Image (cartoon, rainbow, N blue to C red; front, side):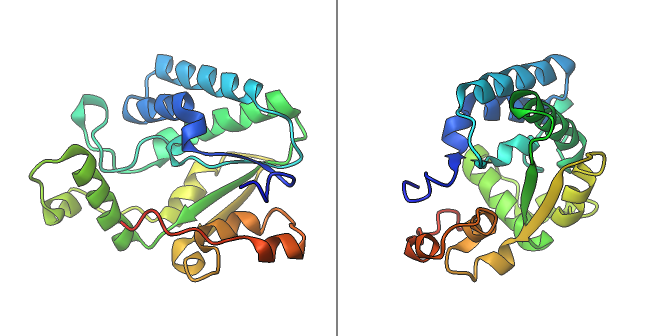
Length: 206
């Protein structure tokens, strides 16, 4: 990321450990004290970072817990929407509180076709939790498989003054820099910097 550091500050999962943990906890157990915990950790993080022209925060957990995990009362989470809508609202409020009410916020959601996404989710949960459930049983626990574009639209439906973008992994994995291209396109990089970037090996192959 050093070639990009003059143009933006980047923060990923490892930089947001406490924020991510609090977001996942609220995703599993959407109780008011967990919501307060998330806001507190997010505020602490935002107060610790430098104010830059462009700041990229990339962390899937900011949407809560991945559908397929068990939530409150061990009931399976079927959608990001109910908790992600709350978490996203808090995120935007805290960004405006920290960087000013006129801060330009872009929420970029990477999406994937529903069935391949659900198979990836199942693989991830199987690796992290184990268990004997097969994919067919897992698949049948969803009356309808979430459509991630529709999920993003519902999550952000009540936001105002925020730019919203979705980026299809099926589209962006075919580009030179993979899904990162969706972010790079927003940074207005000089052509020589853009062309000089080195594509990284794909990490998530699930």
